[in-house]
Amino acid sequence: MRCGVAVIIGRPNVGKSTLINALLKTKVAIVSPKPQTTRNAIRCIYNSVDAQIVFIDTPGIHTPHNKLGVKLVESASAAIECANVICYVVGADDTEICADDAEIIALLKNIKPICLLINRIDKVKPNYSVNSTLELYSKHLNISCFTQISAKKSLNLEKFIDTVIPFIPEGEPWYDANILIDSTERFLAAELIREQLLKHLRDEVPHCVAVEIEEYKSPDEYPDRKKLYINARLIAETDGQKGIIIGKGGSMIRKLGEQARLEIERVTGHPVYIELMVQARPGWRQSQNMLKRLGYA
Image (tube, rainbow, N blue to C red):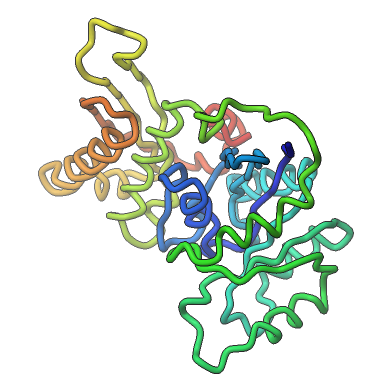
């Protein structure tokens, strides 16, 4: 039996969270076409007959523009230190090293083993050659192995697992086989609410908003309750953003609450009653106290 840690790292919006969901065959990480969707290093547990792999889904490495961004990069960097193997996700259509990948390469310079995960092979042109992508990154890093995958189409995922397992040390499982994520339902609820912000709000607005769960009362803990009750605070940076989140006559916040309710019901299996409130806290992304309160520091 093998048990260990594989850290998923890559630039924003390269498909890391989509890969995690595909590996576990259920949604444990929120996804969005917008960059910097993942804000926390999330431990997700993959089980097979002869191995348990703790995959850590990390925030995308990028050049930060505020203290929140700094904490996200620090979170990803800290995860690297506890890895048995680094799974570096890149795009099959990459033709040059972008600024974000240059940051990652600098982090991984003296680290091994590194498994290069060449994602989105379903999007490449007929004349595509994996050698071009492999050579591009091998110039800068000591690549131990590589696999071509499509996280979105769930292509070659078993081959990827077979490639990673030799780097996982022998050991007994750390988690029960029915545990998929080392996080609370409260955390998942906040993430699913934030996913709706990313889905329905445009431009920079969703990146300026945090979700704080004020109350979370589940029928699992309160047997007298028939519904899971959630009271969540959406923290924006400006009154203008607050107005956009609420929408004309409250239309947007109702939509956000309804869509989040459906997702949380799907994940928890409970009927859900959700209340959302919005608060403007100028400069929260630059506040050490707020970042600590929200779990980012």
